[in-house]
Length: 416
Ligand code: HEM
Image (cartoon, rainbow, N blue to C red):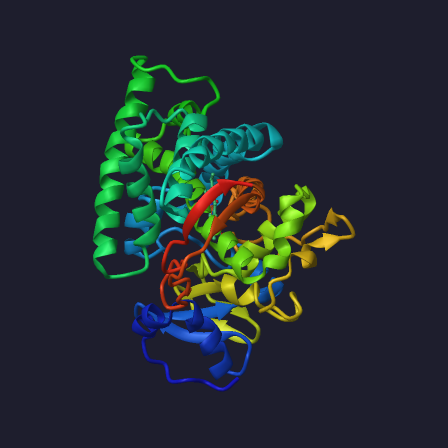
């Protein structure tokens, strides 16, 4: 492969965002990328072979690998994202119990759909709404009710703001990063107090709810989680659920740009709604890449990877790989259909939320929830009548996380 000079790429990454790794790949001849980030040797991989390499703990570990600014805003110190081996397996088991399976997913979809219906009934009386803000509010309402996180209607806007700020501020040095750190500290302290009350018996929550299960979970050492770490993990359920509001904004952008898809959603075609949700997750930029550090010298694609190197899997690049997704820059939900059914998707193929098996590796355990919520809300969105007034709907690839600039303003909103 051709080599571009080995200068540190942290600033170009922050400037180019999602385009950084694909650009480096083009410059290096199209395959594996060798680079340097935060002064550390870095290998950028993609494709099923790259993903399988990264998810093998002999090659890549997470502990101590994630940058401090990301941990202090997005994930939290002590989070499941930062664990390896047995400690990860046991903690991950808690998330699998809480998040996977229809008996967990459907009650949450029911709560959020009810919150959408109650909120949408009020949109008709307003001159305009910002869809992403409204979606964040109503998802926060639904997920907190489902998770047994106590929040009154008066407290809801401030909590929603803190959760969206945590999502928005992890990959920038701008003021939104410092707001994200403060929001995390505030919400960890609040939730740690709730966990302590549950343990002391001064607060009761439904058995089996998120707060209950996290408060009582024992880690691989047999110990309860530190209250602050328990708070981190409750946040690791409610915050990414609220992040689905980004995908709701992208879904509205897609319906505006390719209005031919509205009809099947309007008609309530559920298989198409799931395919549409997959295509929104594939097409639009959200999580740019994931990564970890090699614990020993290893080799990938003929490249020597010295111990301590960073290895990144280019999620955005893989989801736009023409070998996996022909004509990748066309928005085509049908690529996920086989006749009238949703087709099987390979474990290493579509990777907006990671790859492999969520039970054994770090793949997102909230993917079923994301697809179920997004498809339910896309159906509801398509069934609304509204106008998109003149606004800036551009999505800058240099901003991580990306979003339609206006947040998607709707006017004349009426139930369809
Ligand atoms: C907005 C949609 C979402 C996106 C784009 C997303 C993306 C991701 C990505 C890229 C990872 C890292 C995978 C890896 O490192 O291998 C991840 C992990 C994780 N996600 Fe999600 N996620 C979303 C929704 C959710 C939801 C709804 C939940 C919970 C209700 C959730 C909970 C988690 C947890 C707990 C992890 C850590 C897993 C581990 O380290 O083992 N996510 N997610």
